[in-house]
Length: 93
Image 1 (cartoon, rainbow, N blue to C red):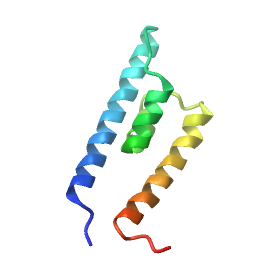
Image 2: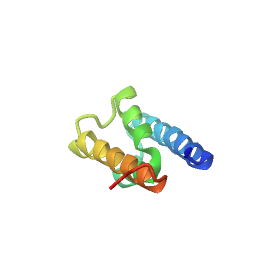
Image 3: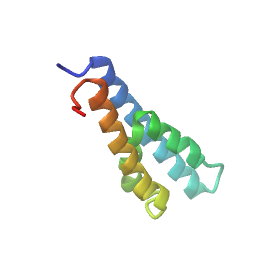
Image 4: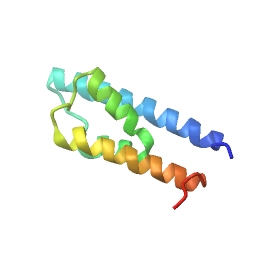
């Protein structure tokens, strides 16, 4: 059974948007202007953009020392992988 094409497109788009949001937040941090809240960043991660957030973290050296991001995001990714495998009937319990 193949992954649904729509799911693949959704994950790609969610991660691109999340990566861009990390870039925007880093630029705002440098300029000292209004920032994107961590709640919003984690919301994007939980909605499928966790890989984009992690890639943005390390690409832009942004929030890499925050434990919530350093350890929380990999946990979110693991949960998302398990959920995707379960929903596509590839996970045997």
